[in-house]
Amino acid sequence: MREITYSQAINEAIREEMRRDPDIVLLGQDIGVYGGTFGVYRGLCEEFGEDRVRDGPLSEAATAGFGIGLAVAGMRAIVEIEFMDFSPLILDAVANQASKMRYFFGGKVKVPLVLRMPSASKLGLGAQHSQSLESWFMHTPGLLIAMPSTPYDAKGLLKTAVRQDNPVIFIEHVRLYATKGEVPGEEYRLPFGSARIVREGSDVTVVAIAMMVQEAVQAAGELEKEGISVEIIDPRTLAPLDGETIVESVKKTGRMVVTHEAYRTAGVGAEIGQVALEGAFDYLVAPIRRVAGKDQPIPAGPLQDEVFPDRDKLAAAIRDLMEEG
Image (cartoon, rainbow, N blue to C red; front, top):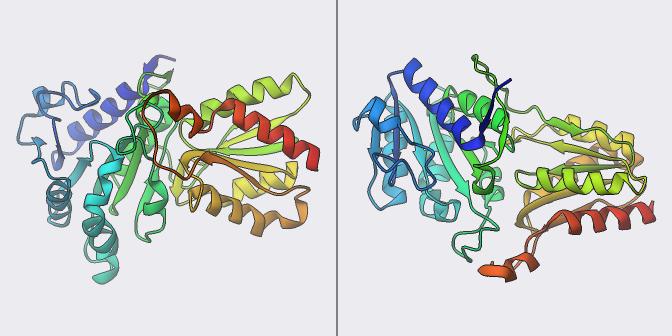
């Protein structure tokens, strides 16, 4: 099977869906001729024209509002928020309006909107360009949330997202854009709410989010040399969350670590851990651990390594957990 980058997979998904459906439009800053801040939109403006690939104003709130309006009016809108850190500027439109419209109107109104949000954590960009704020949106009923970690998942989940009639928060880790993976050339889509078992194991379950999936795989390889068998689960989507796969894994291993780059307090790891606790309490032989970002503003440059989790911190937490059980 061919290998392409995560970025190319996103581009392919958008291109194929725009060819299929002439009602799909793109909105965002610098997405036209420039091709997007991270180059994901390259070639789309040339193929589909400026009427369908629209550079938005320097206002995230306005761009998101245009996208919601287009979606309610019958179009399908893909809106990019240039950095996830800028998403607070759209919270009212998304959390108070778009997420609730189908409920308000008894299902008669559809909101086919995809909000793409690159997360740029651990790139040294400082406190206002390095955050992962997925838990804010996970707290809002009516929103679907995807955080793919591979090119295959990115393309399959984005194509599913575009065809949804409800708003989707689609979060892409910038450090994953250059990673390569196998992606079929033929049409495929992936369902929301179906986790992927990245690696099977018997001693501890690690639920890893986005970039931390790669870190978990590296940590598991090192721990295997020490006789510790790690099972890794990638939820792929946070809303809906595949709690059943997580619970069944914890029942098998009896131990669990959740890892993500977002802040530890009230991060998605707390919710995922509680799901496991409620479903597999009698099977746990040790407390559930979280390996996450520190609760502080994110520094620029090398100091960021003290804030974010990595494979070494994850491996150390797993070793400690094995001693407890």
